[in-house]
Image (cartoon, rainbow, N blue to C red):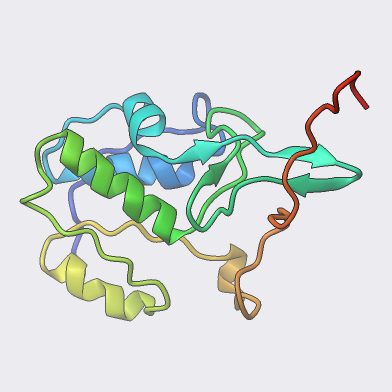
Length: 158
């Protein structure tokens, strides 16, 4: 059986170059009747923070919980489901709809398992690896989280 959930299409290519998670979330929210603007969602609801390079390594927030960089440009890095769950919960609360919807992280379910939501008329935010290749064991990202950013020492910059 084929079922299409009516959801608006927002083209991310010009304005939100690396914002696929955010734009998909906004399309989901709009599909259930919440008229939210993508920039409002990104600025107000999406936890995001910069990352930086130090001694040839990238450092920054854990993309499991915070979007590293800026979804508006090529510095955007991407994030995992818990970050988007938090952003969706924030948007629902700010838009007065937290009591109408429950945000679920069903990471690891197959596409076939996700169809139960679609069968009920609910849109689903779904992202996967390129060509659906298996994800390496454990969390995988190239940001180093264990060392804080070096701050200038007293007496000058290093």
